[in-house]
Length: 73
Length: 139
Image (tube, rainbow over all chains, first blue to last red; front, side, top):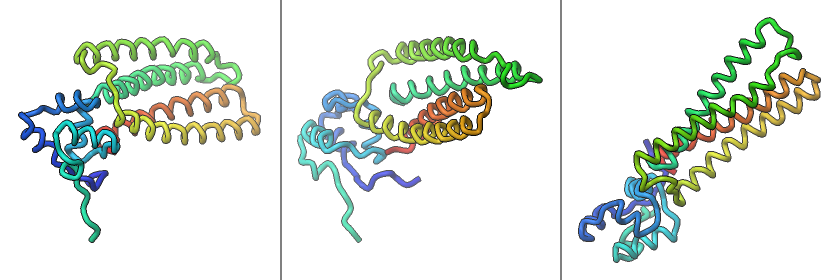
């Protein structure tokens, strides 16, 4: 099945690097449900810019470190 | 599965059971009876009871199973709900046009009422089904 978004992210690895933060903990910090964090990690949902910035801030990273978009080919 | 996804599944089940029962009762009442003599009006009101009971019990159960997530929702739930509503809106529009033509063709009130009712129920079913697809497939 094709993913509904081209945006990829490194949230899962960055969570683990961030003191082993769980999806539920990240979700609580950002103010979304755990299932939404899971959907974002799996590329099934592109978050709003605001939520994307909040995720990057909680993980202590820049937005472009957390989220990537493939270059035009 | 998020609380809103479970809630959507509960509402789909409640609608299917309640209006499935309604459909069977109307077919039974209409058997061999002219459309203008079918006493469907009490059923339209009565069907709300099982719908509300099933939906309420279902929501109590899903809330009790995971109290910390009860009634939680976020931007993804709102986006999925919006997309579901678009699908439901199309079906209501088609049903409204069908009802308009039925009225212009001077069909019996029985058929006009059931075109409206079918449109509303099918719109809710399509809305809920599409939401569950989006929860699973992604948006």
